[in-house]
Length: 229
Length: 304
Image (tube, rainbow over all chains, first blue to last red; front, side, top):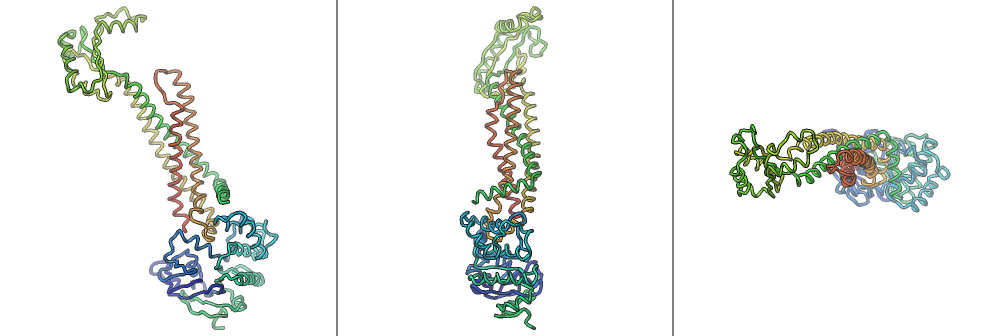
């Protein structure tokens, strides 16, 4: 599903590479934790998958398509296969829960009847049934993140990227979010989650990819957060 | 769905930057009013020229009795001198430029003069001998006055070569200066309009960074992301253009048709019809301005 072939990303000429000759493959339906200290290259990894950045050298393949040679105008349709969730939720404050989720479908031109059936379905799946009319500021952090997940998942992407989705949440709430991501993963969606949260990683026992100063230092199935522990 | 969604996005954008929207409308309004004024002035000039150049003639006044002009030292123009002038006008050098020539004798001039001025108090002090005999020359191209002037001026028996067109030259000069002035002002204002539209779009894009960020993330097409911004600028500019058209219409209707047209009737004026003719041009200019500034701005502020 996601394949990196000797990918190097250098932001500024002469600077230390943010990713250094990384090769790895994530299969369809896998759940992968991306761990490592700040600045280890986790975000760069996600940005390359979203093609917000292009690799300086090497190739990134998403669902068999080479992002290096993908022309600009094809990027949007490629992104429709990918959902993204962030630490800061990135909800639209003046739109309701329903509108926030519907927005993702409206802007890619989905027909109204499709939106009217899919959005409530997705909201129910993430556990927000009955809160459609609330605005983000009326919700708890965990609920806001559920809205963000609903928005990322409403178009049924084949890949869900999560950049520290539990970074702003307390452990109990985080656990709820992880259960949700696990459920999404069980529907066949590939989930890649960058995180600092060792407890979660240790609990879930999924594949762990560790980056350190841009280099791939560990790729372990059913792994834990710290290799030393 | 899409259409409705884009409309609501535009509405939100225009309302959020209301003061900027208003300033874009006003600046395009003022600049396009000047553009329109410049165009209308030029239309007025060409209308006037078209109407009057058909009628204007070159008058070659022949020497009357007692003229003080050097070429008239020999007294009243003699028959030979008149014939010589006539021969010159028929010579191949100038004949091509001339559409028709009529000779007005002293007696003819006196008849015309008495018809026109016999009720004036000074009429009795003028006699037939004060009249000039003259050639009235109509040119194929009224601009070629200089050719005739070069050939005939300074010839014995010719007192003066006068181009009737010269009477209107000062008027055209004023109108042309006015055109230049309004074109210059229009240029400055248009530049201001472009900069303002650019700033407005940029502000709008920045204030909706969150939205556009999400749109990019979920895979909305670049066109779909940029369209509301482009239309925002275009709508504001078009409203400005419409106001300019209305302003020009009002000015032409009340200042020219009703006021000038009633008080000075012998001039053909621009009409409100002419305003309708230039209206699409003005709106086109506004739309183009907005389109260009949007494309320039958006390529920088809403990257893929």
